[in-house]
Length: 193
Image (cartoon, rainbow, N blue to C red):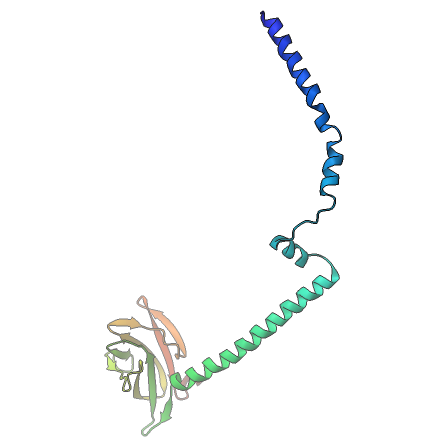
């Protein structure tokens, strides 16, 4: 057999096979449509999300009502919890000053440091020398009451040998020599507590 005959033989065989099987694709579209016509599609999770995002008026009102109700619940819960947390911590950690004799004010320094072994306060009122704080009841709240005249004072806490210059009860903060220091106003100076 020559190459030309081989090509012709292959072509004729392929054409014959296509003619024999052609009846199978005849009216295929009509058969497929009639087969799936009575079926209903299964609804999945994606269909639920699509329906929620549908632009119909009823769906939009339902969405807005759900979002609004959720926001109200979380705002109410947040206000309730904020009141509980703030009121319980304020009574424990509020710095107290009482006017004493000779123009001195008793200033309470408070440092929450659970698990600490030693806490002290250093500042320009004590020549940056450590004044120890005590934790008498072992609750982790260290305190010291120091008599100070009216004025502006910079200070920091030293907790187990580590500098802690940002007291949350301070009137302000300054950054000097690479560290933060807290600022407390006593008496009439600066109008602070």
